[in-house]
Amino acid sequence: MTLIESPENVSAPARALRTQRPGRRRHAVLLLRVLVLAGALLAWQAAVSFDLADPAFVSDPRTVVIALWELLGTDELWSNLRTTVGEVLIAFGISTVLGVAAAIYLDRHAFVNAIFAPFLTALNSMPRIALGPLFILWFGIGMTSKVVLAMSLGFFIVLVAMMGGLKNVDRDMLLMSRLHGASDGQLFWHVRLPWALPGLFAGLRLTIVYCTAGAVIGEMIAARSGLGLLLQTYSSQFNIANVLAVLLILVALVSLFTGIIELAERRLLRWSAGSTDVPG
Amino acid sequence: MMQPIQTSRGAADGSVQASDNGIRLGAVTVGFGRERPVLSDVDLTVAPGEFVSIVGASGCGKTTLLNVMAGLVEVDSGRAVVGGDAPRAGRSDIAYILSRHALLPWKSVAANVEYALMLSGVKRSARPAKAMAYLDKVGLAPAAHLLPSALSQGMRQRVALARAFAVERSIYLLDEPFSALDAQTKLVLQNQLLSLWDADRKTVVFVTHDIGEAVVLSDRIVVMAAQGGGIIAEIEVTLSRPRSSEDLQESLEYHELYRRAWHALRKGMA
Image 1 (cartoon, chains in turn green, orange):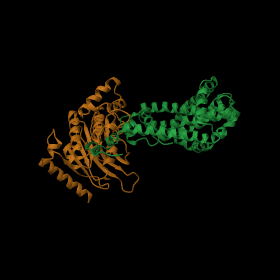
Image 2: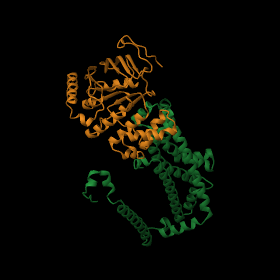
Image 3: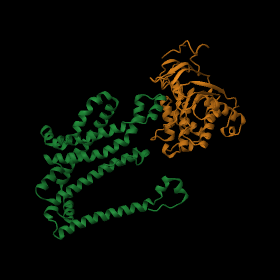
Image 4: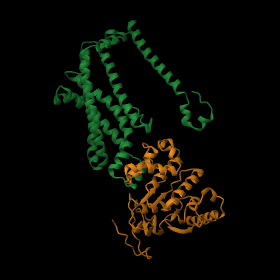
């Protein structure tokens, strides 16, 4: 990229960044993305067409698209989708509420935190997916066991993100507020909570991904309904095209959830534009 | 709340009344557990409505002295009486201005001032007009809707000034509020502080390491020695008011006062 030597972008680096023709660049990125996707699909199709790969194992793009289209027309898909969406949303909601509440409590009670911190770390280092069969044993084959499995992942992500957000609140802002006579409640609502929001939102974007994974994997272990059950059924039938089509639906679902979270984030955190782009 | 009981030292000249907006420190000692106390036996009296600057090299304890008055630091011995009462953080008659602006980045300029008004118990309906009135006094009414991130460092500090004066306290404690600003911006802000103060003559204690600033602003300059040496000189600033920081740069009287303060400061460093 070339930087034009004009007085404006020399004196104001921020403006210089903006004057690098963002519109043109965005178009180039979009075009290249389409090309990468098209290239991958073509390579896939070519591999199958030239007998380099067995369509019985990897299917092919055309078949997957047809499978997807046909799936979208069935009641079977929509009823299973409803189950999964329900589980994910309930688990996400409870994880968020409990995670935020626990983080606020532990942040204010260092003594309790000191007692529980190692246990929370131990629980969080457990491979929760491996607990799936136990949860099904304890909470039955219905939605509850999937919600619990998803929550066992989501809760800790929210807890850790929110606790991180509440750490190191700007000392000057707290001091200034205190000196103006702020109560503990006012300090929380006007300083601590807004300060923690960017960290919380970075965690929420991760939480929705893990809650979805937890619900789907739970359904794959044992369920009466859900996209995970569909995946399991199609896999056992070697219906690769349908497996891939369901996975595409899951990708769309998670993208939709993430999009909604990002929308809320952009509205609430206009003041910290860009500061929450935490990788991972 | 503690009664302003006088101790044996530093208070021989009578009692302080509850309505008094003055400050009286008697034999204040603060050690922070160190072998050599930061402040030892410091006496200082500030009259109601007086503008006093405290100058000194870094580490001389000037900020600690201010923090004693704000109730942010406990004294090991001695007595501090501010506005007729023992200092306490969050008191409704004391305003404290930090060297960092401490604006909330998620609130607009106006909302930041209104936040301080809310904390001070000003009724919701009265807040917007009051915030705008004080923002206008520092020339920032047009920026009221902007977020602090859209402002320059000098503008942010002006918002902090407007915020502090909008809450209308009777005693103002300022801790190097202009130290992060360039020389020109500093002069502008000094003038704005002067005009805010001139409007109703609050009691002000202003900590700075900038002697010129102290001469421009104050009625009296208190010079502190390095390394816990305490107060070594007090210089009355006889310049007439209203003052303009720009005009004073060319005044002989200003430079003579500057020289005297500089001399005292230098002696205190030796």
